[in-house]
Structures are given as C-alpha cells and as structure tokens.
Image 1: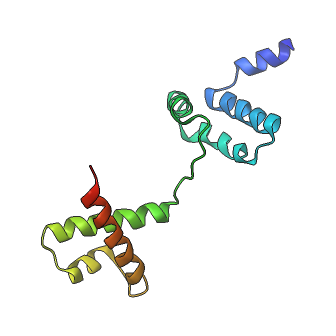
Image 2: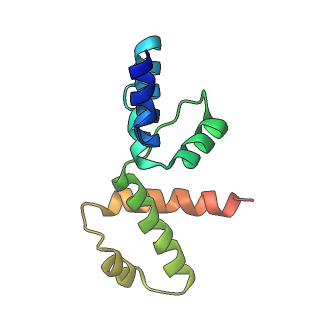
Image 3: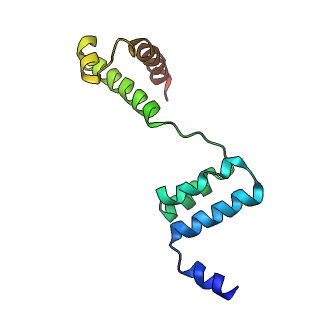
Length: 119
C-alpha cells in the first residue's frame, strides 16, 4: 500500500484523473464512462473540475468538427447576407458545392429562424 501511495504521488494531475475516471468506469460498468478518461488529457485540472461541477451527472453529445464547421459556415453566410453580399459570392467564399447546397440552405433557413427568435 505504501508503494502505491508513493507511485500515486509521482503521477501528473492528468494521469491521476485518468486513473480515477478509469476506476469509475470499471466500478460502475457504465459504457458512457469508457471514453471520459480522455478528457484528462484534453482539459487542464481546473477546467476538468469546472466541467464536473457544472455538468456532472449530465449526458452530453459532443459535436464532430464537421458539424461544428457546417454551422460556422452557415453563420458566416448569415453575416455575409446581412452585409449585402450576393449568394454566388458567399458560395464561392465558403466553397459550397452543388452537392452541399440543399443541406446548406436547409440549415441556413433554420438558423435564420433561430437567430430571429434568439433572446
């Protein structure tokens, strides 16, 4: 036990958090905890604790970078439209292909409505 305590004292915060989260996963056998230990390497200790304090017990889904970029492009288009730019110029700036256009326009319409109702 003394050796384990000594070994734990030599670990970095991220390593210790990873061990704690792995133990939590193994103790609860909740598959949702299986990847959470990666957060210890993505967030610093204080950010991780703030995340736990704020969202502890909540199930969340993290968007993919593609989903994030898609919304960002549409928000840029909304800004460009408000600045009076033509749709063709916007398509060119944002590299919107013919294949992407229907999805882009659908999201655009939804975001305009969301933004108009945002308080």
